[in-house]
Image (cartoon, rainbow, N blue to C red; front, top):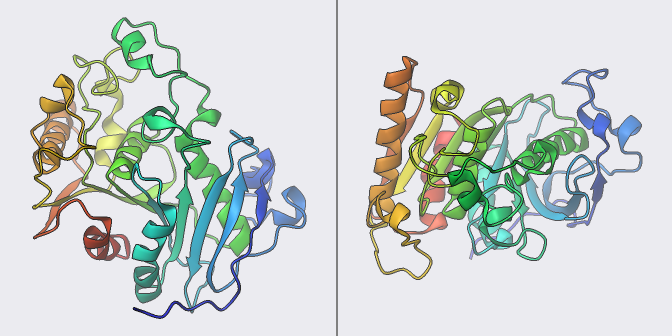
Length: 319
């Protein structure tokens, strides 16, 4: 068992970040802690955790955040978010990634969207974009109404990024992000619905199913009825996203593998579905006449395992 290094004791920090946390008046590189969040302790070298209350979004739905600040941290150190799967096991994902953060020298941030505050796929991997689980049906009829973007689970990551910048004195204006399984769904839909988010690199690994860039397929399996259009995906398709797949993630009988007719059209298992998603995105980029910024990568021998995907993902995100 490897030794975990903690230069400070894990502390519970309440980050209630006001709307001015990324205030325009301060500038994107300013550190607004003293003005907008008095009394918030700065994060220190080592590993710890805090509780994030998103005052710019769902303030009544706290997020436990684990972090590792590597030795040699500077304000220019890259910030990497890691999104857990449907198991909501933030601690396990943090344990899988802590050594990679230390080895590659990036600031690791692992938010946990627990099932009590962020129930089901609606609140996590579908991002709370629509107000209820029947959003797919409403979208199919063109009658779906989106929630305000400030209440999306996707935008909570952007708000958390601003809070982390403030608490660490970071001058980074963009972050990097990885997601595995349901976390991979979270990542690709975040990029799809908010291509303007301050993300410089992204890795989506072993998603169980995808939202295809296809208006003829109803949301959430496609864009149909959602108000998102294929013509508006140019920015999304040019982003530096790596679709990372384990070539042994081919089990078709897993209990948590979605088998709806729409999901089965994407392929019998996660490995094939990842290829289907990548190919569809590349075709859409060609149709739109834009440069395709994505990459497709494979981890030999890896099944549905965050721990096995993490080393390759960390290499990509540490570039």
